Each structure stands twice: as C-alpha cells, then as structure tokens.
Amino acid sequence: MLPSNWKEQLRYRLDNIFAKGTGALIVLLAVASLAIIFLVALVVKVFNLAPDDISLPKLMWMGLMRTLDSGTMGGDEGGWPFLFAMLTVTVGGIFVVSTLIGILSSGIEERLDALRRGRSRIVESGHTVILGWSPAIITLVSELVEANASQRDACIVIMGDKDTVEMQEEIADKVGDTRTTRVVCRTGNAIEATDLQLVSLQTAKSIIVVRPEGEDPDSQVIKVLLAITKSPTRRPEPYHIVAEIYNPENFDVAKMVGGDEVELIAVGDLVARIMAQTCRQSGLSIVYTELLDFGGDEIYFKAEPALVGHTVADAMNSFQTATVMGIRTGDGASKLNPLLDTVIGADDQLIFIAADDSSIHYHGREGIAIDESLIKTGTVTVGSPEHTLILGWNWRTPAVIRELDNYVAAGSQVTVVSSDVTGDVADIAHAMTLQNQILHFQTADTTNRKVLEGLDLAAYRHIIVMSYSDVLETQLADARTLVTLLHLRDIADRSGHRFSIVSEMLDVRNRNLAEITQADDFIVSDRLISLMMAQVSTNKALNAVFADMFDADGAEVYLKPISDYVQTGVELDFYAVIESARRRNEMAIGYRIVANGNNKELQYGIVVNPNKTNTVTFDPSDMVIVLADS
Image 1 (tube, one colour):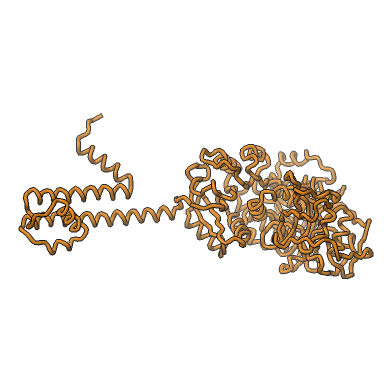
Image 2: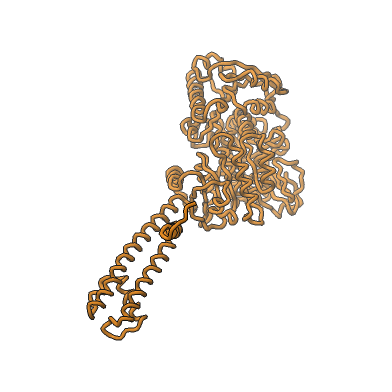
C-alpha cells in the first residue's frame, strides 16, 4: 500500500465529516467561524490595532456581529489596519452565512425527502397496523374507518413496499373521507426489524398482515410473523395479529410461528366453503356480507346478568333489537346454535347480531304472546338431487367439490368443464371420496359462447366459475372469468332460465367491473377476506365464530322455506318465527322476501336481525334465515 500524505489524510477526514450529514456540517462551520473570529481578535489585540483599548472578548463579540451581519462594518472607525481586520472578519462572515444557508436548505430538502419516503418513526398508541400492500388494502381501510366511527381520534398505520405518497394518494382517492380516523403510511419491508420499529408495534392495538401479490405469498407472511414475534425489541404482552394464509398446507407452519398471538384466515379453504355454500342458496352471499361488514348489523359478545341460570332458549326471545346466535363460555369457547337447553353461566357471554352493542337491551319475555296457530311443526322440505356445473379449474376446485358433497342430496351430479384439466388433475379429482355426488369431466374452452350454449345450462341449478389461477397470471385469469360470466348472464337473460352463478375473482378491482346484478349472482374475491380480517382485528374472538359458521361440521347459515315454519299470508311478528325455529333446535336470524330478490336498495330481499315487534306477511316462496346443523 502506498503511504498517504497529509493532504490525503485531511481530505479523508473532511469526507467523513461531510458524510455525517447536516448537523456535522453546521458544527464544522461554527468551529471554523470561531477560529477566524478568535484569530482576527487576537491579532487586533496583540498589535493594538483598535482605536480604543478594547478587551479580547469584546473584540470577539464585534467580530461575531460582523460575521452575522456584514452591514455592521459600515460604522467602524479607526486606522486602516483595524478596518482591514474587520473586513477580513466580514468577508469570512459572508462565506459562513452563505454556506450555512446552503447547508440548511439542503438539510431541509433531505428531511422532506425522508418524510416523502416514509422513513420516520410514528409515535402512536392504540393504533391498528397493516403490514403489506395489495388491492385489498382499500377494503380493509374502509371497514376499519367504519369501525372507528365512534372513536374521536383513531389511527391506522400502513407499511408497504410502495412510495408513501403513492399509498396516501390511492387511499385518498379510493377511500375518500376517513372521518375520525387518521391514516399514516410508511415505506418499508416488514421482515426487516429496523423497518418494523417505524410503525410502533409495541403500542399497537392490533396488527394485520396482508398477503402480498406474486408467487408464494404464504412464505412472506410467515417471515413477517417470525419478524414480529421473535423480535428482540418486542413487547412482553401478547400481540393481537391477524394474517391470511392462502394454501392450507402452510396453515400449521404459520400457526406454529404465531402461536396464540395470531388469528389465521385460511383463504383457500374459506373461499372453497363460501363458493360451495353460496351457490346452493340464493341470497346467502348477502347474509354473509351483512354479517362481515361494518355498515349494517355485526356480531357482538355481551354478558346478560338477568339470564344467568336460564337456558339459551330463554334468551332467544328476550331481545327486541338484537338476535341471539350462540354463546361464548367462560373458557373462551364459542358455539353457534348450541343445545338450546344449555344453561347460561355467570362468566358466559351471549353472541348477538346487532346494529351496535348499544342496541342490545334485555327486554325479557313478558308481554310476548305467540299465537300457536301460526306455528307449523313437523314440516320439512326434503332436498332433491342437484346438478352443479363448474367452469374452469384450479387447485381449490377439489375442495369446492368436497364441500358441495357435504350439502347436496344423494344422487347429485357435478360436471367440471375446463380447458386446462390435465390427466394428473383428473386423477386427483377422481381419487376423491364423494358420498352424494357423481363427478363428470369435459374438456372445452369455457369462454367460448358456442361451448356454453351447448352445455344445456337449463339442466343445472347452480354454476360455479373458477379462476384459471394455476396457469395464468392474475389479470389474464380474471379476464377469462369475466368473459365467461358475461356470457352466462346474457344466456340467462335471453333464455329466461334462472340459475345461481358464483364466480371467483382474484383482483378486487376486477370485481367492480363485473357488478353483481341479483342475489343469485355472487363474486367471491379478496373483499370478503378483507371484511373478515377487519372484523377479527377489532375482536380476536370473532375468528372462532367465523370458523364455526363456515365449517360444514358446525352450525351454518341456511335459507329454508318460511312455509315450513309459520303460516303464510297472515300478518305476524318475528317472535313467532323464532319460536318455531327453536322447536326445531334452530336459531332464526332473519328472512328473505323473494319478491324483492332483484332490488339492490332492499338488499335483494334479505333482512337480518329484524325488529321482533315489526309485523310482516310472508308469501309461500319466502325464506327464513336460520342457524342450524343441517
């Protein structure tokens, strides 16, 4: 190595000082200024150049004033050596001030750029943190804003891999007025410990981990969970984390990493269950949306001391503006539609559907008179075999078929038509053990109008359009789904044959292009998952309720003929419907007026949690919405 001279060493030290930023430069400038002022003052004092006998500190003060304001020199008196000394200080001051202005301007610009890039640490408490960025963020933020409407100063902090200004502009454009909620964005990588410190996880109320776009999103979610739970700076108290896992095979690993701190939403299984359930029951999708969003009625937990020692059956008709749907025991276990003779304990909470927790008021059963002649008993409409058509194929299709098998009557058939069913996929599907369905395959282009018209659609009661997500990227897969969906709607309108259509859309933005036209037309997308994540982020216990609601082994939501429960064509209140359902070990939570099935303003005829005293006259075609085991 060549030896360095003093010039190189000085230049290197100056480079290091400049690299330290604005603060170091200001200190260096101050030291240089003081050095000039001291040297000039010392020369003036030693050589007695001042017109009067002025002390060294006074001379330094005079030099400082001339450094900061060059105009001060105009009033100087004395010999030329003194004036020249003051000129030297003034010229140095001009250099100092101009350099200082440049440094400050550059420092402010750097600070503004840092703020624009979202790299400053937020100081909040009781806020909701969203880690990651995807189109589903818009739904999440909208729902959280609605949930925070009763709070005076709520805060949502988002950290994504996009530019902070871009995120803020997109939220402002698509969410609009956030009312009492402030939305703060930061740019960063959620698996980096230093970036996680920017969003103050230690003081957060809840954390939502959003599944990123691209290949293998589950691995990224698991890495984020590891970064949160294993951080050396984490708080001692448990976090409240909500995360979505796409592939069921990764669920156990994610649960092992997050433990009891994380509530996982199994997206793949959940989508399959929702598609299987909603395709068979007209209006069920509207019920789910009503329960999952914050715009209407939601699910609440509340203890009722007046009912301690009474049964769940006693509680069902004891609330006028809220509907009982289950019980949460003191050990934290939730059960929808429990055994109705279950005794309510002192530590138990009832699970309600209500517009708000403030609308849950115990009224008791006094004054409720139920006309026995209005209640029907022993009447059950037996389901007949069904023929379901599935258009398209992806890895979730076998799960949809298995879920359908839990609901359809024996002798039912399911036909899969897809242009991408390979031999291996067919072998997997044929290997499934189906109890109630016969499975058929057909290879064809599901976007071709002639192919669709040649399928004899009138023979099918339900049609499911699956996304080609295994072989196409998101936008192309959604485009094929959209084309198929538009053809189906047009065929239905021209033929006059009505069938339920449930379609799968990967990008929530494409869902808006395929606006739902009726209650039998439902599009499953990330929006429904986002609604659920927003709900669970506000109340951890809701995840167990949703798991029970969407699981074929637990209590589920069914729409059944109202004529099996009460007399039709007669004016009655909802207390009679609840009582009739109770005698079947079911819980009535609403009804559907079929005549309003195409009226979007009236929720396609769906009424959840009706006021029990309001009277209604049912038509034989109307339905009652119940929680039941089958």
